[in-house]
Image (cartoon, rainbow, N blue to C red; front, side, top):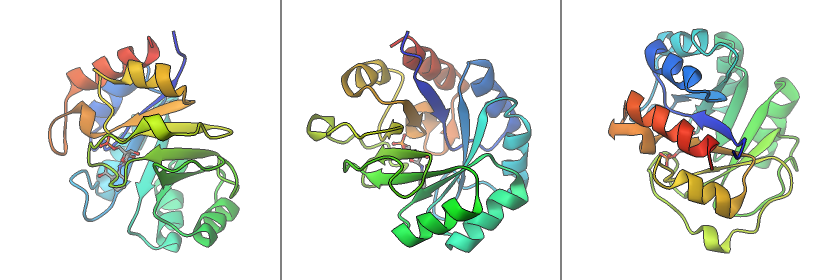
Length: 196
Ligand SMILES: O=C(O)c1ccccc1N[C@@H]1O[C@H](COP(=O)(O)O)[C@@H](O)[C@H]1O
């Protein structure tokens, strides 16, 4: 058993969040981005957060201003803010304002925690696209880091065995069509990741 931390991202309903939590996911993600096929309203975000029980609730942002992103975490009561594509200054600003911040970087190796973030997320160049990226060239980062980008129930065990991340994060790979979560795939992903 890998004991890897598992985040299921892009949730918009309490029912899907409950399935993830009952399957033993460690975190549920909610995307606040106008351009994402998984963009959640505040009401949907509150439903997911309300059903997250002991799992971490993570707000994922990439096109909000940093001040709006911080305000969203405070307004909705999420546990973690996950930042995609923000400047170092923005990350530091969020770290100063919130207890838990994760920073995403596209496929490049970086030291986790260098800007004060709790964890580093290594992702493909286009987050949420379902595209895999070349793990062969990855230099394993220091510190707490999550692997994301094109993971699925079929490939997550091998990816965990190869890269040895602290955690994994998935969105496209647990969908029946773009933006539509499959409860069967959510369960299969958590089982595969945890049994790696
Ligand atoms: O899921 C999105 O639409 C999204 C939009 C903007 C920023 C991040 C987004 N999701 C993150 O992308 C990866 C999962 O990608 P994949 O679909 O499994 O390849 C994960 O970090 C999500 O939090």
